[in-house]
Image (cartoon, rainbow, N blue to C red; front, side):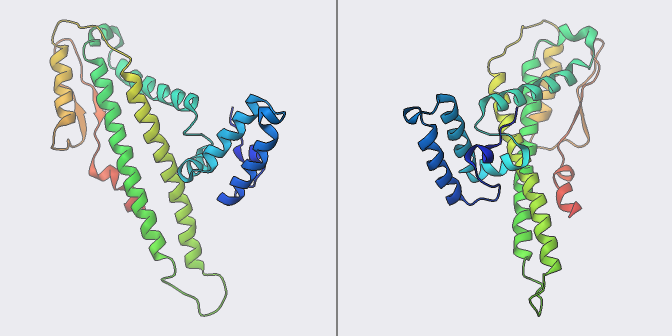
Amino acid sequence: MNVDYYETLGVERDSSAQDIKQAYREKSKTTHPDKGGSDEEFARVNEAYKVLSNDEARKIYDVTGKSIYNPIEIEEESKILLVSIFEEILDIKTDQFSQFEYGIIGCLSEMVEQRLQARGKDVKIITKRIEKLIDSLGVITRKDDEPNIFDDLINDKIKIKEQDLALAELDVKIIQHAIKILDDYDCKVKSGGIDMLFESFRLRCSSTDKPKGDLKLPSNDSFGCLDVPAITDGDQNDDSRKE
């Protein structure tokens, strides 16, 4: 259940940092347990202020409705991510899944790490794009005081990119937490050639040379191929090409 932090503090969504700080002070006076309030209500006010007083957290909250400080939300999103990746591996060959136990955590880790690198690059690309758009403001000027349609367009694009950036930054935090979750898991060692299969996958993923196209694990008599979309320079530059 999403909480409206602006409503909690009694401020508008476009309120300044000073307005939010002042509202927090006023709310604290009435919700503090020593002033007749409750622990739960005071905790909600503190959480709202913690998010809205932090520029990055507020930006992510405005776009996604999620708080980077809410451990429950981050935990759930991280689990959903891990389960979805695990399902991709599970769907390779369900009837032979028990043979995939050896190296499965390593495989999961590599796939999660790939996603982290990809979203990390997205953050850098989008940030640079926003900087370029900001630099473009005012390049074309009007001779009168009427609205500048070109700056209006640039501002609209900046808003869209800021939303994309907020989503990418939230994804990074979710993926980072997913990696921590994996530290609590282990798998049984199985005999056979599956260790070579996953070792091949690991080497391909960690190679200094970027793989092109899809990564295909080598097949043998017992196992098929695992197709994992590779991260390519082209994928990372899609954002720039669209603009």
